[in-house]
Image 1 (tube, rainbow, N blue to C red):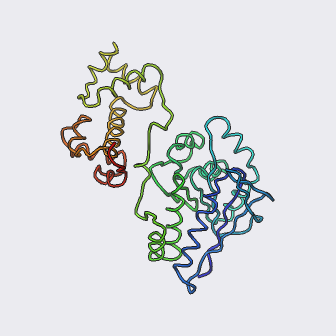
Image 2 (cartoon, one colour):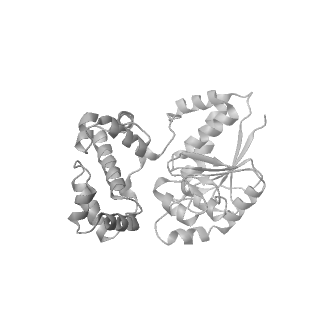
Image 3 (tube, rainbow, N blue to C red):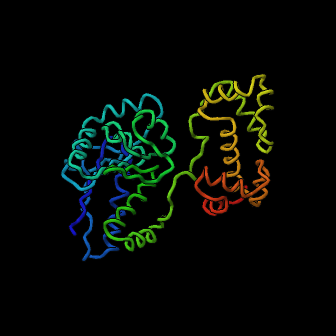
Length: 323
């Protein structure tokens, strides 16, 4: 087996850590595999002569060349119209991505590098993921793609996308597993203290960091639900509190938020439960009761549906000491 040729596409404003993170891990994989196993030939490429990464880091680059895998790192992605201006300035990089994809070789985006793949037209009619806090934005920009933000790594017909930032390591371990074997991938994970068993970014989602949809009416409904998390959900009583019919309440809330009041309440209860699991010593049964579920099994099932983990496993991962 010959060395796997990997090119990391550097461009103005890209995250330097995402440029170097995968090559560094592959270097360790080559050491772990030994000299008798095929390794990795990694180059940092750019259509530009000079590239300065986010944070002012100057990168040494070489011209694009034929590689087996082209990796597109993420970049500092501020909200607002600056995103479009930033992507528009990356025309040479978009051309490199399209040219590489036309060869049939693999293309990989890290984090919000997926926006460059979308601009190149590579996500159309494909499943993809990205950083959870920019998934809605990507879905709006690429309506023909099936954006699945709960996943860490998705590969669909030669195009791989990854979740937020550290998911570059999940991809790298998967690449090592395929090229060097599961034993080498396991060794590298142990050497670098990486979790090679996680499968979802759902446990890390903090809805407070997401854009909050809705107008005055839905915000008032949300506030009432948040103030009564432990109370039994009563749609009729909720509608009476706002002097509307249940049908009107459901329609207006859905029009403004894209969900039902019950769906919002369940997500809000899970958000509160996550905080309690992270910061208190309360039992899972006590936390379940505190957010309106007398049956811990029902609560656990709801929690797992929203986060991808059972409450006990979530606490073991994210517990930071009582406050």
